[in-house]
Image (cartoon, rainbow, N blue to C red):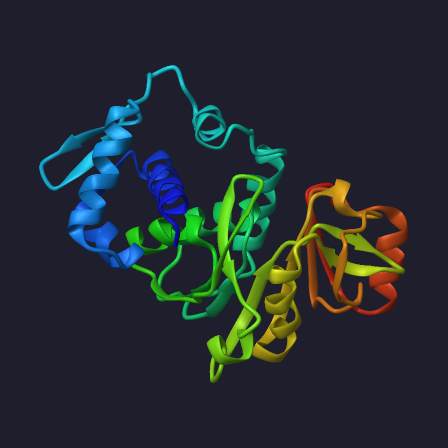
Length: 261
């Protein structure tokens, strides 16, 4: 991980947890305590945090909310944050005690990670760096998939062409992901080829694939196709367009949405 990417990760963790300790950061980011202390010094000089004994706390005004602070960190606001949170709430109902799940990249998966503390005995395999601190904090057993750092819309994840090597021998009950676009002709698409490798592995490693998307992602196309439109076992959205309801009903694919009567 490059120094700039490491600093962004530390910022994100602080936004989420408001405080962090040096020992957790050294383990999570796989660097020395000396490196972490230098990073914290730099962020303190920028006014982003205040160092404490053994760690740091976030410097922020009481009037700032979560999305506003994230906007300061990444110079962009998470689009449709409330919708993504509501979709994550629906996805949580599909996770049972004792499940082993894969949690993909992106903001919706991050919000789902924050809600997993409501469950117990969950094992999570993930490439979502933003979600790591949340998962560790709620005593969830976590397996992190390494690879090249991918930064997209304020979220940090990993991916690699060596996905077969990273996922060798790993199987989960359910996989939870999002995509850039869902189209009946183009299928499921993403904008980053480096992310496509993981999506193409999901159907092999999971018994059930749950896709979480906002309404605006229907009839939208990314650059790289990762699967057919009917590949997921379950679709979760704030609203599913009528033509997709017909399409998925014909294929016995489960649909869950906020607009259900």
